[in-house]
Amino acid sequence: MSIDGTSGEVLEGRLPTQDSEVVQVVTGKRKQSKNGDDARFRTVMAWADKARHMRVRANADLPEQAKNAI
Image (cartoon, rainbow, N blue to C red):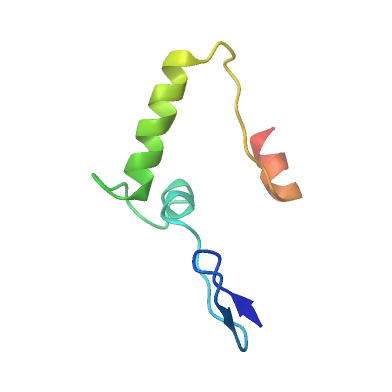
């Protein structure tokens, strides 16, 4: 069973998945775009850079991601 996280639709069987545009850019599987999701992510992070006081940030959902962040 697969669930579309956007629409909530429940589908029979396993659907193929792929990493987000942001992850694909970070891992070198895709080049940066000028107006894609990765560009919007960079814009939001630039806004955050202007407001933040700490110089460290990381997001990790998996142990390997945490290891990479460290």
